[in-house]
Image (tube, rainbow, N blue to C red):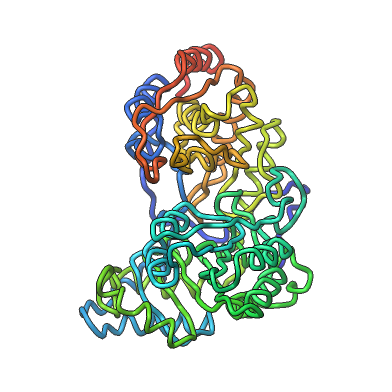
Length: 482
């Protein structure tokens, strides 16, 4: 992809699209934002969207669709069985991934449930570079156990390592030797890794991982939900791949996997998901679970309109100017925050800009959920909704102890082709102000703590009156501004 350079020398991401449809946003006064945060139990998932100015909670299902994808929705075949829409989607997936069989599902976690039900037995181990919350929950629900094998360097928040999501190959060999290949359900590769900053995996590392797994008779499962960002990073950061097209890189990545699953809420700019493979036996083993839990084999719980949009979106994923937009905006935001001293994960990854909450709030105890506290503070300061990623996103041990995560991040997702430059700079400004006043921010305690996936609907309260102090300082510094 050719780089667009400005004569001024300034480095800015250039939008390779124009905006034709808009949605009105609402920015509440700071006092109203504090009240909304309290009503939501200091859980950004429980905020009403009408109270949010910039929704950076997730990139899942909130990416902008192109005019071509929207137009495709109008020609959907809504037959319950044998829909032509399904066969168009199946054909596109088989073309891009190099697979023969496809099972539709309503989203990525449905695929994870089917994979766990089919392959994971009690006592089994699933090695992976890093877990995703729902993937881990489904594996443990059926009696399996996750082992994270990301390289140690991948857990250093600030570095210049281009592929921090890589599996440590020595750890993988040791894991297989210690557990026995017969006790390993599959090796899961997440490209890229969601919970450590959207960090990518190199094609070389995927190839080497697959070779080790296959030498030991272990299937390889690729979570391709964040594949489009990972494709961009392979193209731009991996020297051996600079001369390859995105289609060629996609085929090379998928050739390392026995099973590929994805959430189209991320990959394909739509809503849905699916599982693709070449192994007929695997297809037959999973096929019966689709009509049982999802829907008939030619819709799998998806709207046919979304399936048509997904077919177009997957093809658009092969366009370098399309998949570069997210990573370029994320890098810009991370760079601007660094200029203001804000600690962010580097190099900038995919999915969103990630703030190192442990360093931002070094005075807040790890058991008081600094990333969740920072998420509350960012919303109060600017109406920007982010998401805690790490300790609060986990769950307690059976004995009630709280395992402290290796990283403590606030994720500010940048849904693809959604936000403008001025909106990103507004968020940067408010976070920069917050960093100058970080000493005011305190921790949080649970008041309602679900046993499973507590980060979705648990409720917390601030420790002390730090939120009132933050609002007072906002008014002193920024006056009557919203």
